[in-house]
Length: 497
Ligand code: B12
Image (cartoon, rainbow, N blue to C red; front, side, top):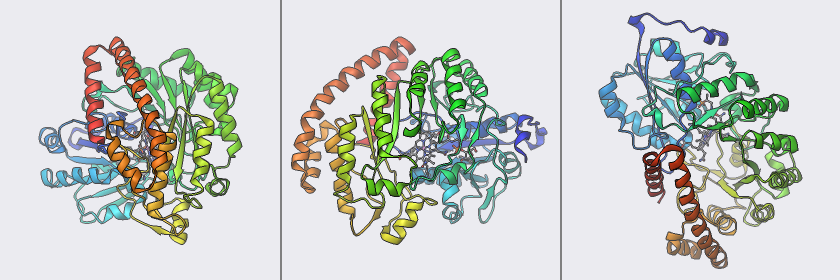
């Protein structure tokens, strides 16, 4: 199928129509409620074709009934599951339930994990089809001809889709879609850079492909009409600013016609300047997140980011000068890193005084150049089912790599070091005794007592800001919606602990 054919999808005859159940599994520590854009796009294509779709997104509705109850009621002809490498355990449960409760229903998997680890998925004989990469150009054919297979077939589109040909995502087929508040949009797909740890080129492709700003704005207006006028718009591009003028134009029209709260991910420090920050602020975006990854020059050099630490520092200062919130993202354990060098990242973080910091442990996904590096210079353990971001309460992540110069134990110690030195609220005060025991295990006594008073102050501030937020939320959405949101957050918190 050709990309432009997506602009004019014809309905199939009644006898060919299928009932398709899609699911997005959820890691129990995930707190975001952003619905899955990829599934919404596939649902939109299939709906235009005349098929009946139901999407159960456990990120959006964490307490949605389990898959067997949807299978019983909806009676799907085809089941499709999206999988992240971090979510394989949760996906496995859904695959198992599908096998038991719909043994004759073809099962398709797709998303970043089957794309990168297709041979792993192929070992699972409960799966019938594995889609690698984008599915817009293969999904109709696949769903209409799906049958049970002995060994899963690997399906890959022959050409890359033009994102402007893709129909708007369809969220009204999501279970409890009325709860949607975060709305993702990609104004472009792909990234021309080759950072050593990032697998995105294998997921989105090398070619940077764009949408016209006007088309993105029309999509948001459509979503405001169809879903809610109260959305938080999340620009999720892999790299939105490859063509600055195009994105500036998007921001200008956004400020004029939309004005809803906006977040933009993956902004590079070397793209930050006064013009961009002024436009972001006018478009109701009040924060900027920058990827530092590592502040030791030797480690930084090996990342191949294509920018300098000086540029990152300058960008961070500019963000602050514009009165915007700053968040920084670091990676612990990259090639060349060790327990001494991580201090450079801690010092850099302290110097830049961000409002929030994310400490990720290194994740050597397939297709990344760090994977080859660790294969040569260290030991790779199994990363499937692991996440890079320290989620949950105070536990540092279990390292999935090790080198002679940075052992597993030192990696955990380094993670705590980073948290104690720079984070005030990630480590939960209510668990301070357990945290103390962890600190003692790694002889981080002074670091623990450096953290404790900051944590107390932060906890008081957090409680105050939570009350303010709840008050604002209830003014905007009503008391019932506010209570529901609080219950959701409390449930997520319990899952974390
Ligand atoms: C937006 C985004 C998020 C959002 C929302 C994700 C969502 N569910 O919509 C948030 C912030 C929540 C998020 C979180 C995380 N993310 Co994220 N995210 C992205 C990002 C930037 C864009 C995803 C997107 O919307 N793409 C556009 C749509 C159209 O594509 P798509 O979702 O991939 O779907 C297409 C195909 O994959 C396929 N497809 C997908 N599912 C299915 C299912 C079936 C049945 C079929 C047939 C086809 C199919 O068809 C779709 C249409 O072409 C990607 C980078 C990227 N370019 O992929 C990273 C990315 C996917 N995230 C990544 C990671 C690591 C995470 C986290 C684990 C981070 C962490 N905490 O450590 C979490 C875990 C999320 C979870 N589920 O618990 C990695 C995944 C690597 C991997 N091997 O799994 C990526 C590739 C980033 C990176 N550079 O490493 N993420």
